[in-house]
Amino acid sequence: NARSSFLPKSIFTRGMAAAATAAADELAAVLAKTCQGGDHWCCNDELLERCGLPREEISKLVRRWWGPAEPWLEMLITQVALELGKDVGLSSKLGASWEQAVEVWTEAAYAAACSVPDSSPPQRGALFTQTRPLVRKVMTHVRGVALAEVAVVAGGTRGYRSSQAAQKMLDQRTEQRTSWRKSLTKVETLECESCRQPFSQKLGTCPSCFPRAPPDRKSSVASEGAVEGSASGPAGQDPEAVLQEWRSCPSAPLEEASWSGISGLIWVHGGSGGVGLVRRPCGVSCVKRCLPEELFAQRLATALGVRVAGMRVIEYTSQEANDMRLNVKYAPTSGESDNVPIRRILQHDFLCVMEFVSGVGMMGIPAHNYLR
Image 1 (cartoon, rainbow, N blue to C red):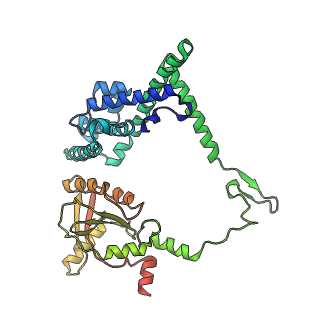
Image 2 (tube, helix red, strand yellow):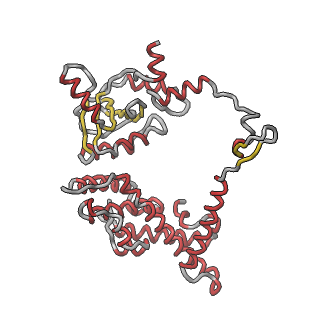
């Protein structure tokens, strides 16, 4: 149950569970009531009071060189509300697609804020990283109030009569858990009784007296191939077989600007940072960060009549870039870790959509095996 995160499991009772549920329901009701158009929030006084967030605390996160402050404040409080809504089950009040609606609004709002003349906006990822402490503060505030109410009911005159006292107890428990985790990560050094050489306790035995066997050659080659010039596939499936399937796909037209209907993603490593392959209804496109030297080389080769893969530049704030990020987020991937690097390169100021050319990357183990 997502709502159980408002109170530590170790101190749950029936009353505490009921209070946590009631606190989550109350917060969900406030979020639903203050939601603007079903896709974003403003710095509403009722919402800020329920979350225990002073407006000044959010305002100080906005820098003057970003441009007008109000759009950035709305994006920040919307991101906070988005994370809170996931925890309190806001889908029951705003519908199953409310998260996607918020994402669409946020992309459009960010693009509009970045288009203001004479402004220097932050990267979207760096901007929303600043909201994490605010989310944690709201969670602490809400569960502290809930615990205080339970303590008063359960303990009568001897119970906690204020949220401050309950919060103090929560802080003490949190500190105890943190200290316990730190003790687990502490590394102790032991001395071998035979050779008198120091070694880490985590090793269990002295590496000088009991050396470990070298790794299997086949697994080393497979790992090297996965890092250089290859792709990561589903567990239990040969990465080369995954690449062979992608090589059989047609290339998408370079000027095709629609990114709806993406049916697959895969990340292929390479010497210039790797590239993401996106399977669209019209074929496969390559997406990567736009590097000036690669763009210059492509343009120069085209001018000299040398056939190379076509390349098209997309600006981060363009509508096509917004559509691409939104559709990539919900697209299926060929491997468990493929979505992360692809979404990361989509946060750069300039992206490159490149023509997909079926073949073998000329580096690493795959190139060696191909040329043998």
